[in-house]
Amino acid sequence: MDVSDLDRFDRAILAILAVEGRISVTELSQRIGLSKSPTQTRLKRLEHSGIITGYRAMIDPVRVQREHVAFVEVKLTDTREAALAAFNTAVQKVPEVEQCHMIAGAFDYLLKVRTADMTSYRAVLAERISSLPHVAQTSTYVAMEAVKDVAL
Image 1 (cartoon, rainbow, N blue to C red):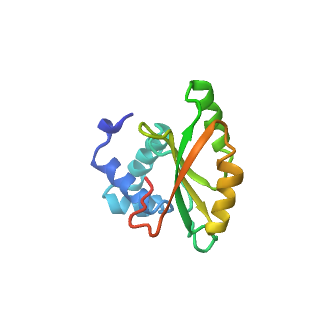
Image 2: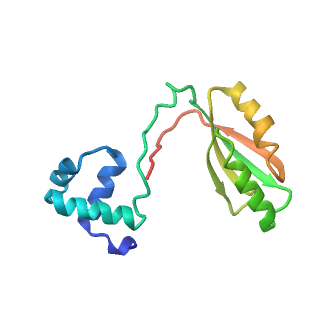
């Protein structure tokens, strides 16, 4: 199943679940204008096809002391496949790294790092990020405010 197979009901299901992941099937069916059984069938199809990959809780970063967000450009000393694989495996183990994207451009990776404050961030940068395999250089950009932050 791919995006071209999605009709207006499937798209409505996805739009609602992106905002309200815990909505009941009954409420979901009422909101999209189908009965419960076909809504449930569509939901299962979207899950089994891999379009819906899971459900998660949205956590307030302020309340769990992870409100400091920094974006880190990472340049590697080596960009051969083995070096990239080593970096990819190691970065998965750093809990403060919320996102990691390989970038085509002047640097190799862009990380989104979430910590309690600047002091915590500096420790993560020095002790964890800088010691990842093949890291040559980092540049940090501190977020002052999240203007838009939407999860798909």
